[in-house]
Length: 259
Image (tube, rainbow, N blue to C red):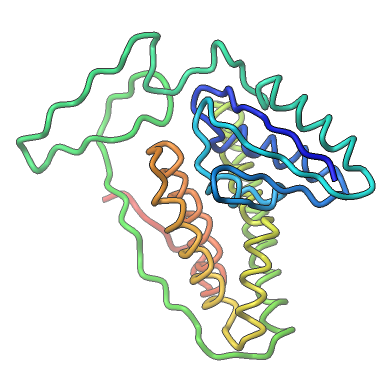
């Protein structure tokens, strides 16, 4: 087994894009690779688990690789981390930063004022729409283990196709922002999530029940992180989860609409 300690130098920590880069490097190798941060040790090939570590900028992780290509895996991961995991250490700033310390917002005196977390640099002016999550009826009847797994696999394939189309559509206008759909697609393909869902199906839950409870459990863990930027990734997980649930419920065309 090979092991090493690495420091995450990305300005916003091990958030969606650098985490995805780390996971994609780990997936190239057959070795079992784990990452430890504090008391938590997770599968390095699971994007959801890596995000749930909540590694901030300057945080240290311990990487362990065990298998036939453990040495190559360790070198590749060390190189990826030291080179910024697809980001520029010195210039990749969070969306709220312009090189100056962001002011602390005053406490709103009007209940109609909502303070948001910026997701991209720049200024946009226009009407806002508050997105509310819609109730999705989850089928509870159980058709058998293999049938439920097949139903889930078909829904995941459809969701992958939808997200690929959305990415291609947005890439023509905002290539960098479109990359979030790649993160969503990797969530659908997460091995730890798949293992959790399949375990529940094998215990008699329908595909929809198992998927809903598994996604919500992981989202709650992520939402509890101290770093607000990393905690906000719980919304991505829930968005992906609801996309699959709508497909499973036969309501994939149903979604939020502007008033």
